[in-house]
Image 1 (cartoon, rainbow, N blue to C red):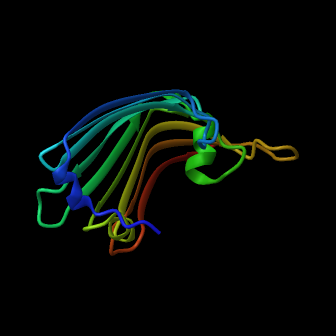
Image 2: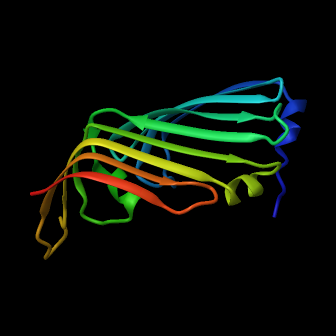
Amino acid sequence: QTRVDLARLREFEADLAVTVGRGRSLPGDARDATLAVRVSSGRLVAPVQATVGGARLQGELLAYTSEPVPRLRLRLGAGASPLGALGELLTGIRGLEGELGRLDLALEGRGQTLEAIMRGLSARLAVDEARLTYGNVAGGRPVGLRLDRLEVALPSRGSLRGLARGVLL
């Protein structure tokens, strides 16, 4: 097990760009990914874009080590797009299909090490204007769902909270 101390970012200056045409071992059929990493004065800023399961995701990875307890934040979002393999990747539900109006995912944590951040990670997922069907598997009976709004939040030291507004069709 490797211990990654985020305070060490203060020792680096870097500017790096990575492009991946297709990630063979990445989940969700990830392709056309770009990541631009800039590390300066203890701050990491990394805009990211990728197509995952047919949905074009854009966002940013940020790490701040100038604060007393370093903070790491990842935000990803997608505009109107097909759900495709992204649905199974996010939910674990096979046979989930449809269209998303908007998807936003945010993860944030604080800690001196990546291990500490992962233990105290908070997560938030929001979906707007989704038209979905589930049960699209051999022998299944597809069921339609219009999801006007879905919000799911898991605070670092709290209980899972959620709100869903929509119609089962």
